[in-house]
Length: 319
Ligand code: PMV
Image (tube, rainbow, N blue to C red):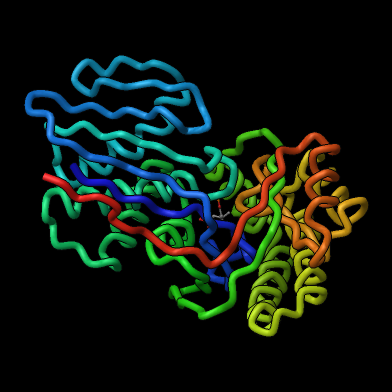
């Protein structure tokens, strides 16, 4: 039996602009997905019993579909199994990352499954191979454009600056608060919507992407020096730019304004593709409780996360 776990992530700055080559800054967080593999001669099964969802299992031999959520979660793992032509295994997925919410759940599942399979079948993949293969697999399943941000963070952990290349950054961990709108989102359609806007209005969207890239670059020394007030200001600027390209929603805006108002946050922005999903807020040193209360009063699900956490690790490896 082999288990591997990988972290979820928040995009601190630069989502969408990164798809067109601008800088983004992301951080791994302390929510994880875990994949456990056992040999089961004669059958190949994928099970998921704790995905912030009802339990389910999918028998790949009969392909019985149990629920839409089951298909969503298991199609990433079955893509990993297909990639390595792996059969006669029972694969168990556990995750505390909300699905399709902008926190990198699918990347964490793909990376954990690839790393577990790598160890279980002795495939000899390096960390970089795992990140590259996982990115390809995730994008093939989503059939869309996309940056390597989520899969690189799930693999390497910490903080990464992503543009044409992926650069690890040595920055201190931060305590942040996530507000989930309780609405899942579809990364592929949000990315396609923004790219279509860019194709129709390049004179407007290109400078917005440039400004987003500049915000991402300016954020790095602020995190290094823990200048949280200024960092919060940049989060507010980035949120406004994301609103301008049409990925905000009323529910996200309500959480963002609740965080900045009653929540007293230094700053708040949506995180990930938008169109639903999550926002993040940067609390003042003694402002955690007020911020969580403000987000819950605005009908969000609020929880604290730490940034800069460890990447994929093989957790157990037993005969
Ligand atoms: O919402 P998520 O976690 O799928 O993040 C999407 C981030 C985008 O920049 C919108 C797309 C990408 O591939 O970078």
